[in-house]
Length: 70
Image 1 (cartoon, one colour):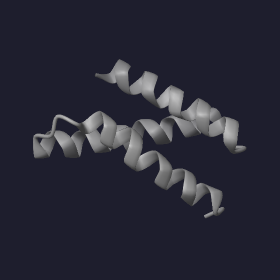
Image 2 (tube, one colour):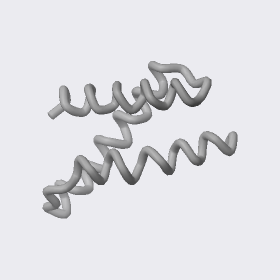
Image 3 (tube, one colour):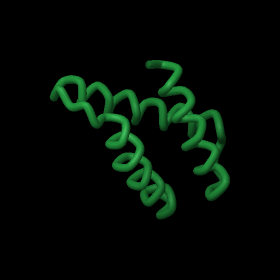
């Protein structure tokens, strides 16, 4: 599971860094934390759709937050 998280976070970070002037390593770490948190919550609820939730729900919220400069 950690390899899947790493690959997903890497891809999300690559896209994020291409749009915003942020550090790639920090951005990947941020996405890894968001994905792991979403997976943990999904596992606790017993959900089988945790990957799509992590990718589609957390990434846009962070990008919007970062775009505002907050």
